[in-house]
Length: 134
Image 1 (cartoon, rainbow, N blue to C red):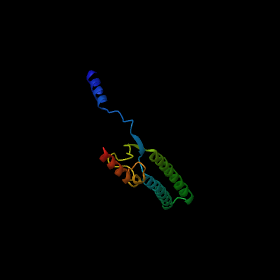
Image 2 (image 1 turned 135 degrees about the horizontal axis):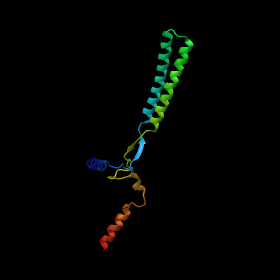
Image 3 (image 1 turned 30 degrees about the horizontal axis):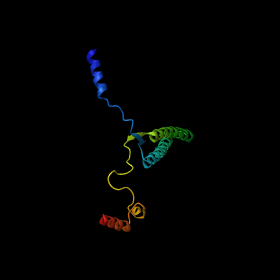
Image 4 (image 1 turned 30 degrees about the vertical axis):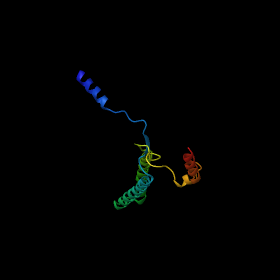
């Protein structure tokens, strides 16, 4: 029993804990999710047509073929809605998106010209005069 417990202890050390700092984002974009919705509708139409036409060609009554086709279509729609619900709630861990690039200037340089904190040409002339006087 000792070798198994050592192997289990080593296996537990190799497992890295999940990073709690990562936030989660949706696994599917809106465009991909809407494609899956359309695919569910298409599957429902195909199931209805296949079961209905199969029942008619087999020589069964039309009422039973329609009832069977509606039943299978509702089952397919229910399974599709469950799958869409799971896909809609699916998320994956993602790196946080930086709000600003660390290197370079942030903001507009045009705003600096209108700012009161920017020295004007008159201020530079006064500095030159005070430097010459000293």
